[in-house]
Structure formats: structure tokens, C-alpha cells
Amino acid sequence: MALTKNQRRLRIKNRIRKVISGTGERPRLAVYRSNKEIYAQIVDDVTGKTLAAASSRDKDIASAKGNKSEKAALVGKAVAEKAVKAGIETIAFDRGGYLYHGRVKSLADGAREGGLKF
Image 1 (spheres, one colour):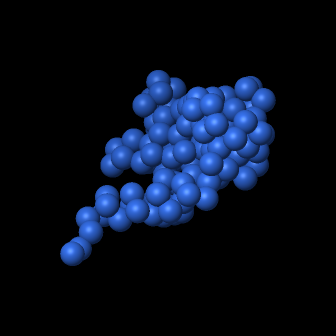
Image 2: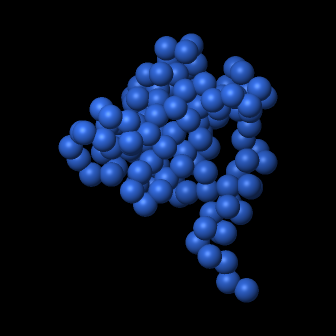
């Protein structure tokens, strides 16, 4: 039985989430990528709270010129700025079952530029 792309991604995501879990000291940077937009949130899995979030639908990023990868880098920088304001410096990167390539990679690079360590 052949798996759909999404079923395959969810399998990979579950395999990643077995290993990666966000704590208070080292929360998880979760990435969700749709065909049009990209979303990132920093999550403390112990308390179940989202500490910071950003997406390509935010007003300042949506109005920016550029392709989807460039906007993903802006999302990474935005979530990093919010995290640093909240006192978060080190995170665990959760690529959400997506390949570390393209938009996901540029979001990670943007987050590193913004001051996050992972």
C-alpha cells in the first residue's frame, strides 16, 4: 500500500517528535509549511504553552516583497526576535517532517541570524 505524501510526512514527524521535546530551558521551534504560507512557533511541551509565534501572514511579512523562501527567512528572524525578548536563546528545531531544504532551511537560517542557537 502506497502512502500519500502527507501520510509519509506525518510518519517522519512522529519519529522526530519521539526524540525532540521542548522544555522550559530549551523549547521547541515547530515549523508548519503549507503550499502558500509558513508558520513557526516556539513551544514549551512540559507546560503545553506557545511562547512565541510568527508566520508569513503577519502584516509586516505579508507586505514584504520577495519569494516564499525570502519570506520564510523573515519569519525566522521575527520568531527569533520575539523569543529573545521572552528570554529564550537556545531551542530544539522541529522541522515537522519536512525536508531540511528550501523554505524550512531559510527559516532556520533566519532564526539563527535573529540570535537563536540550535
